[in-house]
Image (tube, rainbow, N blue to C red; front, side, top):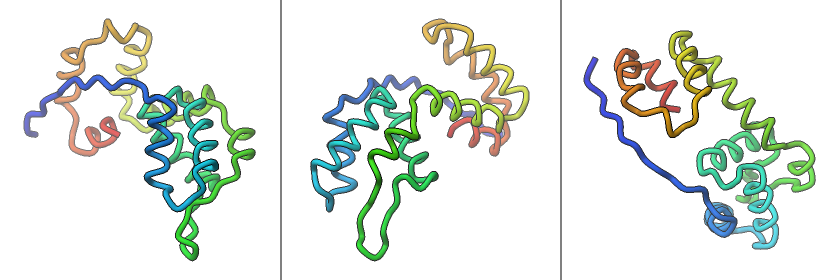
Length: 144
């Protein structure tokens, strides 16, 4: 296996305007007010965390709450359904739990232990030996 380098990237949370702008750029054929409503809910549920924004939108699409109409070439959603069917705590916890369940046991155990410490105490250098020992499939899973 080849050597992998790890780089720290610090990404701040997105503000509501950025979430809306990014949504509007992807949903540009739609009414700006409808997109603004969706952006508000997405921001509320994710706190603007870029990772969770992407995961939240993917979850909406997977659960058919955000769908693309191939005939009309536009996205559609029911904002009230999204509001009533989603909660940030459940979605984040579920997402992380499912990701951890899909990992090799030795990696899942390390991540569970590391989750007990504040993020500022966990250095990437600690992860480096663990990540270097992964095969390509394991590394792909962890990288997701």
